[in-house]
Length: 112
Length: 116
Image (cartoon, rainbow over all chains, first blue to last red; front, top):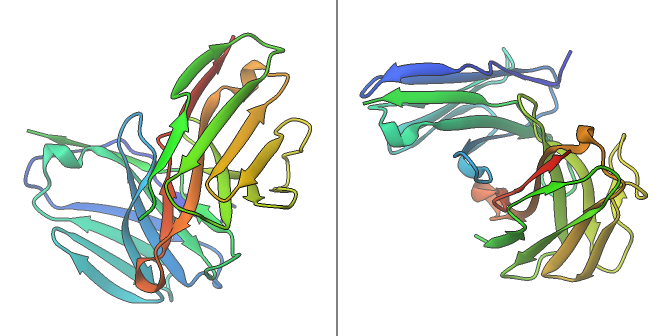
């Protein structure tokens, strides 16, 4: 079993839809949870960062962490064609020397 | 956050040859990381490059195949040696950026390598 599981998609939605992206994990030591967005032919860029459980909102993006279920989500409201990208979840047990484990990424297409 | 320049952006190489990838950061950083991203797979850490010491390699990666240099706090190179088609992948360098609630990685734009 992989430490982090993420559905590769692709996920195709119409413009304006609410998008839900998810990851599950097996290591209960993970405390730091991140979401990266990767456009084609670009490196990943940090989108959201959450420590421990709870929600974090930034504009149209909301990250949720449910440590009891070992499940994290990224919600995108009012999705736009410019949101079309691959979204990678990532997590680690700590900062400064702890290894970060990445999901394989979910490819999202938002149709105009 | 840091800005990373990585080159080449892509290359097509003959099997048996070597390619050196360069990564330049616009600020001094202690650690630089080299990742491989294969289609449909998660980012895999190859090694951590520390200035002034040998790189630390992850399981499955060896120095003879992926030698790394780290001559100063803003620059690193990764060489993919004696390449085979299985080495075709995207290679990315990254640094830790931010602190506290903004902690995360900044990545270069990647090197898309095709070995023929």
